[in-house]
Image (cartoon, rainbow, N blue to C red; front, side, top):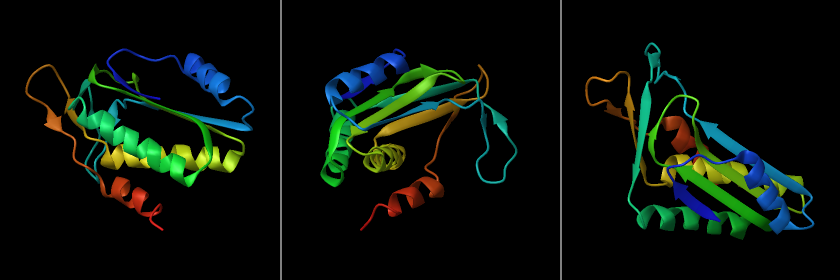
Length: 156
C-alpha cells in the first residue's frame, strides 16, 4: 500500500494493519522518519529549521513509489509493504515517512525496508524547502552524496 497525504499517521495502527494482512509473518520491520530541527549540510554550522514544505506532483509521485515497492517485492518475498509519505507544511519532530515490510524471515524484512528508504530518499520525486524563520522564501534541499551512495549498494 502506498499513500501520500498531508495528515499524520499512527505507527501502531499501521503496524497492526501490516500484521493482519501479512498473516503468518515471521518478521515485521517498520521505520518512521521525523523532520529534524537542526540541519547541518557538509561542514557548515547547524541551522535551526522552523518549517519544512514538501511538494510533489500527484500521479508522478505515486507511480515512482509504486516502482520502488515493486522493485522491493521482486528482490524479496514480502507478505506486505506499506509506504506513507507526507506532503505539505511540516514542523520539527513531525512524522514525515513510514515504511513497513513483512516477510517470513527477518533478513528480508530488514533489507527491504532499508532498500525502500534508500530509494525514497534518492529517487522519489519530492521537493523540500526549509525555512529558518517566518521571513524569506527558505531554501530548497539539495540531494546529498550520502543518499546517492546509499542506493549504490543495491546495484548488483
